[in-house]
Length: 508
Image (cartoon, rainbow, N blue to C red; front, side, top):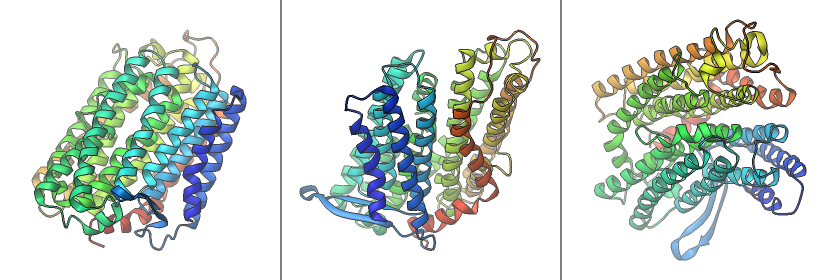
């Protein structure tokens, strides 16, 4: 299986290199769909060959020397924490390639677009597969350049300013994170993440752990994004093309929270425990703040952009992930990891649908869409309206859909946090998170009412409003189906993550 994991990383990189050849845009788009499809098949093969009886053990391992002078190794592997993220990344990239092959955003051309998409996939997959801190940093950085160009060249509106803000925030965060990695490597004598996790902080003084944990936490919190380091996100989502928003929300935000679980918790546990109450506080504030911002954008007369609203909703939803991590309990961490996957599925679907609505209407402005009585998607494009409503109720955490379990487990973890953490403080965070769920339901139902309902006979901004197209159905149906499957069968993900989480925490 190690050959499968290597091929999983090498195939999109090879495809990106092929985009340097002088081929036509349509051929490049077809080749991109083929490469991402092959990558998805490799991810499925990896999942099928994974030993589900031992998800806490690193599998498909490759460990060879790369830079002997620095003891940096080409160390790859997958466990129950990283496997679902690898499959999610491969799936979303393939669906984006399918969508783009029929609906390429306006920009320089299909060949450059496909090359950047494949390079982005390589970096995202590598982030979840590498087991060396230096390699983790490199993979973390690879994704920044292609996403910058996808926003600045194929985006809309204030796309250059949004792309500049995105790259500035994330590069500064990565630089701070790198300082923490280097401190750990120098003090521990290795950058190997498995060895460092097995040591569980031994060999690192309390002061070293505090400094390293703070640097890594700040760097990863920018990407998560945690309040108040989130301000780059709404602009980036508003300006990005549809597939850029899907991958940014569906995968790239998960790179930050994955790093918190994979690096921060097991390697510097003392430092993490010191900062956990503050992380929990920021997470709780982020949940409420994101929901209130969405409510403000959803009200009549606010000129709220739907893509911007979903971006702010991501701040709130990722707050649940951060709250689960801050609890330092297996329950909270399992909830955080489940919410990671659920958010990727649901928000990916939301951005796909909203992107289609924007393409049809020429705007994502909620007031323009809704008009006097509502946009009446149920009457004008019933299939798109139904999918938007489905994604909205999944996002608000309706039981039976994927959004429910992660938020529930994260709040339960906060209700009974790890020993040494203040239970009254975390119960307060849980109450704020509960308030956030009510606010989330409020703004999403307002959006459904204003966009899906209304009088279909009222004058519309556009005369022709085609319903769901075949390429859209092919791109969106898997996300809707998996949202339902994960909600009805949560053990599919929790059975993988629970043993691995207990191993990382040193309790199993």
